[in-house]
Length: 393
Image 1 (spheres, rainbow, N blue to C red):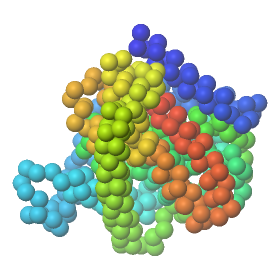
Image 2 (cartoon, helix red, strand yellow):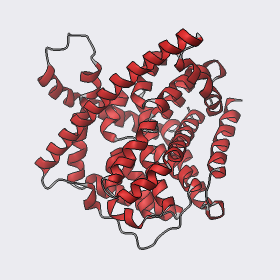
Image 3 (cartoon, rainbow, N blue to C red):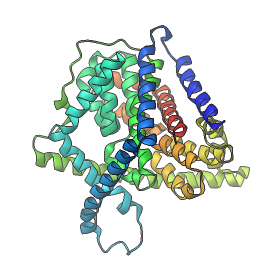
């Protein structure tokens, strides 16, 4: 029965994207079908085959071991300040972003990631018939998240029509950055982080290209040099470390603000209405959780986490979700974890618009106008990813 409900939820999500399309006659149905098949193959491979499970295990272990080297640097800086056995979120979770951001910057400078992204994006464009810029941006977003992925295609912004701009912006919002992947893995099961990062790239293309269809352009050329801003490997290391430090501080500041505000709002709602704000979110998102495949007994809890993520950010939601994981069913953990692995929240509208503003003010105004629709599309992408993970978990 849960499988039937999940399939219905998947179909309804696609249906919503279809109904919101601004050009239904030109939807590339071949691309949509190919992308859905790719999602099924990736999920089946990762969760239902020995090879896939071993791959996820090896990658997860590799990430964990790599992060342990990063903790050596953290311990050198703050060693002795944290009592033994204690866990301080900024130190144990956020400071590791500095290390992973540095690694990412190095891999970008030596052209490992840009070449990988270019050819994977090109392959997706070839088999789906979608624009190379769109597929490149989607794959690029797996590694670089919102701002950086937009910067990598800055030379194409001038020629983009509104639909293509909508797709690349939605892909950026539906993604996460590989630089904070390790932080997520300290809060939710690592296998869902890895799989969701891949699925989100496909989900965002499915939803966004239905809502804003485009035609393929044969003369598009991707310049991988635009991805890296550094002139030397030492410069790449410095840029990566500084960028990681900025992200860690920004996330810390957001958590102080959002967690405090949620507590304040919960207190006000409880005092006035006798029910907290997060509980209300739980009831609002409960039907969505149910259609994604969450067992009926857990839909309010799952809905509360999902609503919190949309209203604040994924870190706040993960912090609320983490202590609940042992009490929830494996399916609920899978679905909610997958849903949380994206930047789809209200603050991301400003981040993406601001990133484009730094490059092209005219296009930034366009993005600002469809900001809420973009958020809806990115949220639908997260729902698709969570649903398909739930189907095969």
